[in-house]
Image 1 (cartoon, one colour):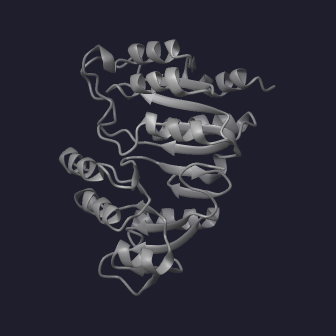
Image 2: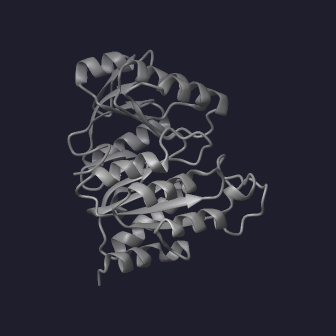
Length: 291
């Protein structure tokens, strides 16, 4: 079993005919993902990469049964693309787009309230269920099917950690990049809750970074509701206060956003802390007790 996506997922790609959408859709198809539709307004009725293209998400869902969408829509139009998918009743929206204005995402967050759609991203690498489905931009070859969940704010560190785990023979149940923006569609707590409920996920690796209080919220969840071991690493220990470090969400505001405070909270909650990004795999191996 896996969370969010599996081998039965029927994926729709918004922005399929653009250069980025084309490239990554082809990689998803090669991985074995069931890509059943694409959406590019004005190109409905055509085919791209052997996939039927529609003008709207609603029509694509009605004709193909798509139940997840992967978005490669430019920043200026991405929020509208998310809203369109929500209005169509799409269960899962994975938005890769970087640079969506915060005000646009604030409106999306408000609109999501009470809706059945789950949003992952924006500014994220997507979701991967190894051996089953790739709904994102991660390299499929570094993943190995197994029972360790991975959730991360950092795309690059996700790839590094997954590669470490695979190199040690530790497979993954699902890997979720929640993105580094200030207003992500899904938080650590959201994804930890899914992993806790998944019978085939035996442990979770959490990759945090400076900025905000999402890691402290995760620590509270781990302490009160998580029964499975959590291995954590928080990037940004050497970042100077007040300076943005890459992600829009990775800016320290007061002491709560500092790596030291996040590490302290996670450690007190019972998470095993990896001392460096290069030791996440080894720390996980130690927690699992595998040779």
